[in-house]
Image (cartoon, rainbow, N blue to C red):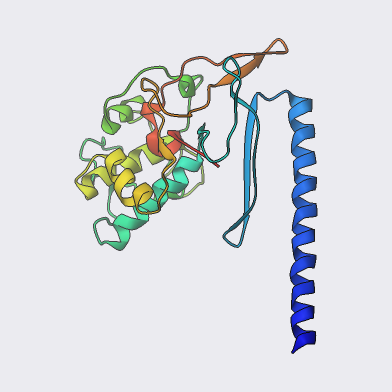
Length: 251
């Protein structure tokens, strides 16, 4: 028994040392990356089998105020990871029997124009519905859209870029359309539904919509490089694409 316990403790100690060595190496690599790229701020959190094994902030969330990045508090734009959390909400509606993934999109979004082809939520979620992606600098939009359906105006009258259901074509706008359908199915506006049924349900206390016109606690400032210098990034309002790329959160 004593020998077994000793072997077990030795294994645990060896594993702990290996993890420590790996995290130390990770820390060195990230520090080198930050130095080389001069990125203003960076947050990294790594989990293995549900256990957080590495979490650290580098640089600053606000260069002017010299506020250090804190991986548990600093909120970055999560970009297209927004589609992942939106998918969790869609799955909730599906499991509750409130939404049919194979019904024509007009079932949930009656304002969607007839284009001679049927598209479904299953196609949209798989980027198979022929909905286009951004054109030009659309992703730099600074216009505030009051509702999800208002944001559909950007692309809803454009033709499909291929025959729906036949070809993969990545599209953030397709997820905008999904969120409009989710509102109908949930009988609730999209952001309220996401807050209640996804973020609150999972204790995701530091994930929220990136309201550009509101103060959000510990939201990082946004920067870009120009002529070798770090400068403030242009003002962007992501209210046109909550579902596809409009949330902020911590790592």
